[in-house]
Length: 289
Image 1 (cartoon, rainbow, N blue to C red):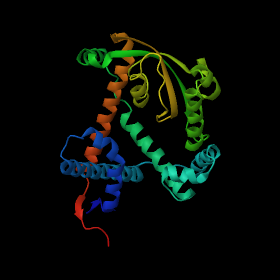
Image 2 (cartoon, rainbow, N blue to C red):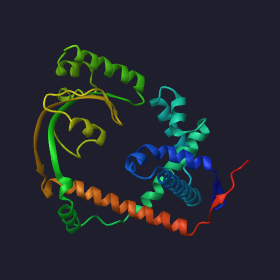
Image 3 (cartoon, rainbow, N blue to C red):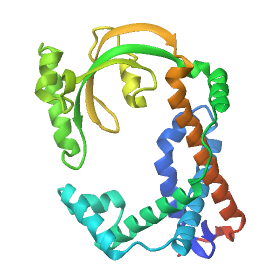
Image 4 (cartoon, rainbow, N blue to C red):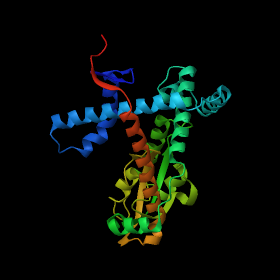
């Protein structure tokens, strides 16, 4: 069934598309839930996500100033210069041509400006707030530590996934044939500083998918090839150290960021909830033939 949001029709296909986007992480988080109940909840959450995005887009289009044409054209020119194939840009922004690209980028900029206005003037977390969070969540700051290095091939507009994949697997092949990790790092990595040595790492310092690998390696072990949001990696752990509880001083900046993020999210959720309360939303409209 389709949804009407302030008269704008949202087809059921858009809700199912959002459900497929959420599905991998959602099913991992709710794997113990009854499958039918889990699917119903996924669709319900997806519907609410689509409704909220639609309301925010409507608000931005109705109340945020348009972006000058020259500014948009300049941004697109820079993006095209960085991208080998314009079709990859169209795919990334889910558009068909330059006009769609311009509209998408304009909406992004206007939305960012709207959110900046919402967040402007929010107070900073107080020292008491920071101390209270630390005392209530000390388990978060009890950190495993390892000394590790990695070989990385970044995936970006300069290097596409197949090229990076081929290079990292060639590096892995040389390791399997007996080459030393340090020799292969020098030959292949895109992170040449200190020979890929990352020093001593405590949990929560790196992205989750990287930590999932290195904190499951023993001292002296080398991982298989794995993917993070940045590209392909092979990691080596040189040493493991006893778990420690980090002091408040060491995690104060992190706690400040956590509390600021929550304040920002709360402000945005409150704003969107207000849009929903004042919107006309009909959730049981028959799909188009």
